[in-house]
Image (cartoon, rainbow, N blue to C red; front, side, top):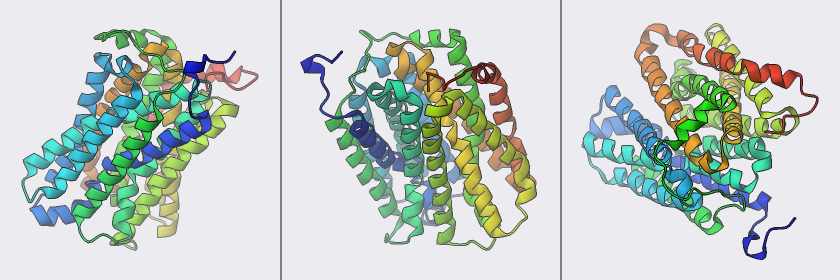
Length: 404
């Protein structure tokens, strides 16, 4: 049955999801832009390592605050996802770019990075909702592409810094803001998909009903275990690479960008395979693989530098391949009119968990060194425990899971 003439979208599903993916890649450059210039910024502003950690945490705290606001208020499902995405991307680009015009002064930079994090709360989960409105029957696949683009985009500032073509650290931030504005324009011109469901009014706290659904609760808890590992690993990657000694200077940033690229590739490959094997199986297999990497890395880290780089690339691939599948499982388990709020709240809790693991990992790195990987291992293990019923159900299916 065809849609009414007024509802027929201007874009095909394939073109629309491609546009959203590219826009997400461009906008996510805002996330790690400060990390890519941390060493130069430390000298220019006279910052301590703790100050740099505060700048990184400010984005995470802003993201958590933003996702809590839009999820608990129902804002994410009251207005068009494309409009929220666009407005937040513009705000994030302006806040990120403004840091380039601060000449010393940690407090203004912290406030601007906090605003950037809040803006990303309207880009990341709303991007996931937006792509599902175009292809709900292929949620695992399209979310794999979207989150993959987000991961590649997050590594973009590292790549810009690594190729050493910009005159100063300010240019890295301004480039990230410029490409985010391009992404905002792309989503604004695209609009929402034909399957966009919208709440009639703001409904404070209504999203909490989703956690009463066993399938949603299992996906969310699996995601929380995954988040204990993922961002702590991504933050520690440059340190792990620099520890090798054979990689120095700009090559540290290029190698870090390669790990982000491997992470994005893992999301995309996982999404493609989810159509055959189902979202739950992909999430469980990837989570198992990243748990194995956590276990083995301390023994492999003493090997030749090429081996260690390959291990980190593989770890990056596995650590993110499950992320979009958790979102797909969650989006299929909750009412359509609550998808945006449910994903935003899940992201908020997950990123809160990631702050705890990041702070702990950076605090004990000097004493644990490569054994820090064992500190991350409980996350994947607890995630697997939460998904045990999904694994049992997937083994008795004679065909791929419909929710993928």
